Image (cartoon, rainbow, N blue to C red; front, top):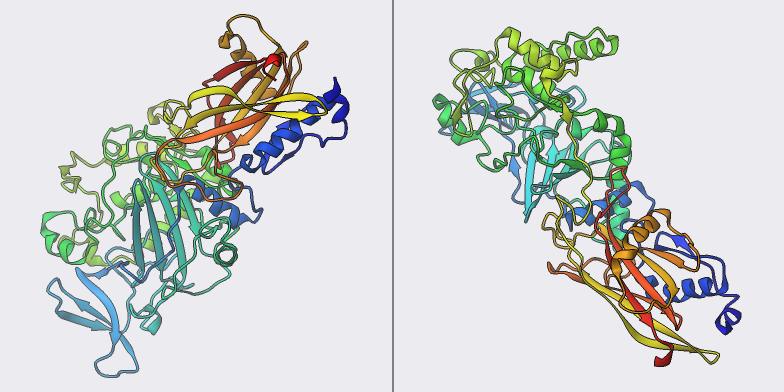
Length: 594
């Protein structure tokens, strides 16, 4: 053909971050590739592929799943996490006797100062985190809700000794703090993401706002550069070890004072005066609810731990009726502390026994920082899941006895049997158009939209168009889905076109990328975004379906069959999740029309 002779020197198929188009080596195949790239190349690109920087890419991934990430702000409308000692709230203030020194002031529920000290070694609810100051004062928490997505910003005061002292650092007016952490969570989909401040900075300052990783978009070079210096690219804090109960909140007495610790009626005054109330609301989620960590950098760092994590059932049926327990810290440490029981495992594996002993020592340190008042009859807030305590308004039936506890602890440490009913904690990446994500491509059609005249030869320009709304999790601007499009060319078919004949062939072709069968030629175009969403631009915030279009050159006297397949970029070490649904349309290109 004349077309073949005219386009022998056309550029061959390319494959890069801005999309992939696979073609053969003949002249027309090269010509096909060149025109498809020329007509559609601006819309052929993978999300979060602009940067190889660990933090910037991580931020782009999070933005593609959760939408715009707000700035971190622990100053405006943030909540101070109260510290209680012997049923009073404690803060640091300048001494009434010497304005150059500080003292700890104890106030009762009426705000009256009832005690002053220069030292603070214990508190009623020491932190269970284990690597921050047990009784740290004046840490701050900020919660931002955007539809189904909420963001938690934690600005935590701590110091290497894990103790507190009467110094200006611990004052509520001092904006310096040691640990900066961010959690993003979609309560509908169970997707969760964790960011932590760099460990190269000893002190942060909450009087300044913190930029989100990845900035405010691909074009926000200045903020992206700032964020690369702010966050830890090594992900040294295993956030998923504690925040793994299918909720963003690690519910313990240290923060959630309104629900645990002060949940019994005799402490209503302390609960109302000192707690964060419903600032962290109840979001009950069953063990069957989806739960998935986002971020290729984080999930690569903790790949093995995430694969091994399991939910379990309490063999006695007592604890897991209300709680999601796992084989990680939220199960192992929180359950032991809540019931004031020593962790136990029947295993004979030396590595597990060493971990078990280390955990016993950590629980011992936590308990040494707990006041006697908290454990006394007068205080009675530890253990914090005792007989008669309440959760969500329902009185617990009982607490496990020693034998029941050991059976539960055996499950928590991964050494139990079938009675534990182990199940993977994390769910698989959901493909589009599936059971979890019911977003559906619609209105696929093919039409001729123009003609290219080259050397006296006419080439038709045909357009495949369809609609699709990426509304999984109801996130405006969600941008983790692209389409792969197969193009099959055959000699013109006579009569009515049967689309079903090509569907299995199309599916196999998507997976093999490129194949030729007899007189049929095939191409695959990958990573097509919707019309208008050009490479490394920010997605539209509209909630409705977007228009997709792909233009291809077509020879007269041929039939072209188009197959479209939606795929989700998972950002969790699993690559992409491809829809199991096929959408196919065909068109005859009539030479007489030219």
